[in-house]
Length: 346
Image 1 (cartoon, rainbow, N blue to C red):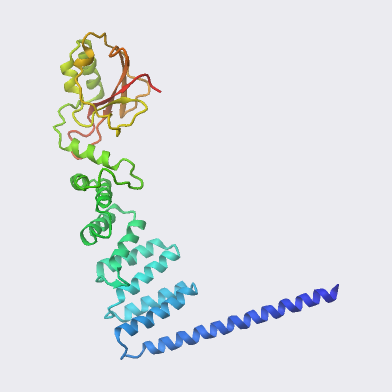
Image 2 (tube, helix red, strand yellow):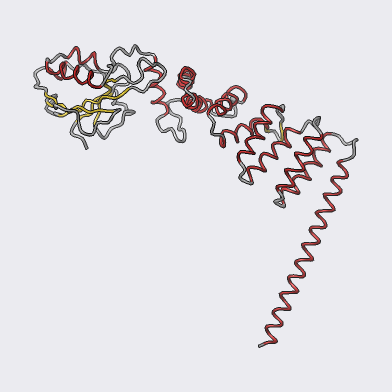
């Protein structure tokens, strides 16, 4: 029994020794290769292309061994000591990508930004380094001001490399975050002008086309149907119903994006946006409304239950909402009658 255990131990030691020898040999080969490359790099007669190949080989050798610190140190030292190198744009790109590999995104962002701001563009294997930087920055940057710059750069410099339609809608959202409403509206309008605006599928924006269209349409409207407060809107609508004053009701309805639909439908459905006169439903009917707004109403939305409009759908909920339109401080925060829900609430 002891002899078997001893044999097993001896075999394990032999394998470990062989492995160490193999590793030592590989390390020695690596060190020798790197030393030869670095010696070659000192030759001032090297052409730019040859020097590029040598530096790239040294960096890739380090990177392939996951020696990320040495990769970064070698490349940044080279850039600092050789500011005239025409490939410094690319070396800093490798530095930024190495920081990404180590999940140091803020440092990677710094280097991507540094390339864009301070170094000319460069084509490497047919790819623009600036374009690659912008792609990465869009993914990792969270500052709206910076992202506005990146999207504008993509639109103006690389229109054939990106979806211009998507760029405009994303740019509009960033302008909104910064409170630059005029620029946001301009970007929304540019988005709507694109031929594929109504069909494009954008991750995280399921209703991009409809929301942009509603925003632009509202901005271009007179907005003369709005009320200073929910109480004023509720009172006006109730008074008009009591007097069977269909003309006033037609005047109170939003003239942009007004919808009339069932609770199951969506505002974006084809038949959601209706154009009709209240006269068609008030004539000959006995219309009634609840004394109070529905208890599901919130500070930004309210529902008024009404009955008697039709034999087919007797119950209508009139939908009021607070206007969110910071572009115009005089309109922002006012109230509008924005739609009708048919039938009892689900």
